[in-house]
Image 1 (tube, rainbow, N blue to C red):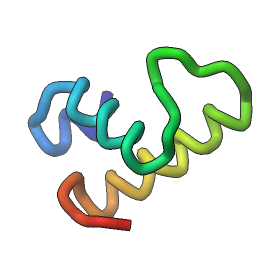
Image 2: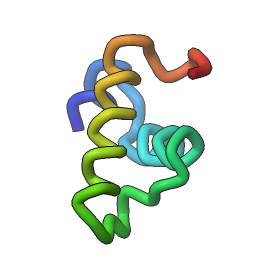
Image 3: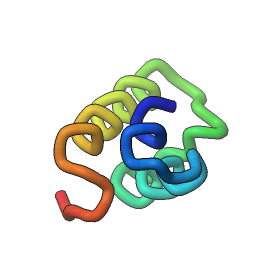
Image 4: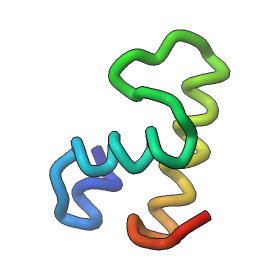
Amino acid sequence: MLVAQKFKVHRDVVIERVRQLSGIDMNALTSDADLAGVMAVLEDLRHRGLGREA
């Protein structure tokens, strides 16, 4: 996972942050809408970082 590599953290940290921000569990994506939401959050995290609030 590129976001985890960029910030040198375990991927579970990124998965948990995405869950906090979007309410979507990346381990159990169920729809294209969920995937689009996760991608948007990951893109935002990649640009702003893990520690900054939305």
